[in-house]
Image (cartoon, rainbow, N blue to C red; front, side, top):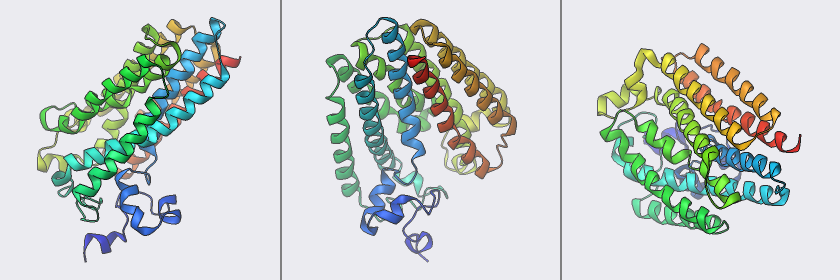
Length: 316
């Protein structure tokens, strides 16, 4: 039985009832899988720091009497579209770089490139198309934000190689995935300040934490083929490391709120996020791959909780 027959055109680690398989024609499935449209958790986790930053900037703007609901809504729409497009482009790029590695890992060998359903040339064309959408979104912002967005490409380019030269590839993922923590503020004010810098650092710590949980799914295969990760580095000490990383994220976000003059409800959202972090650490079983995936995905609720707190505080 071939890989294609075994998974019926789907990939092994994505829900089989996703809208991709219900709404898109079958020839489009491999491209949707390259972009991870069948796994929305990725673009959601990329989007939340953007949304946090935009809402944090709205808090600061409200204190100055400069808040514009239309501007905030427009920025949120742009960040949503940009997150879907650039997460898809990043995953396509990552799959091109990791083509041979993915063939050796049980969870990833059913993906479009290692299974042969998409050629490398086709993947590169699709990558360019997604990047173009991302560029069109970026051009809607001010010049400072455009330049800042272009700088993010350096972190995106380095990340796929990080697992080959460091035990901390999750740190490089954090640098790339958290860049939106700077972008929302830059799009509003045309510059940066301490508040978005604290927010960005907190998002990086959060990303390292949740992606460490995710990486525990693959640690046996990673060890066999020499791929490095914080899951392998932390091992049985993962829970204390997570407590430190999530704790750092909360404190850095707290400093960001103080620097931006965020409202009371934002802090309540942060308290709720702290409870959710504590629950993840308490129940985590690093030897249960299914649970690791579920806990990883639960971080989108953390992101949403923090955003809702920031958003409500603008209007309180």
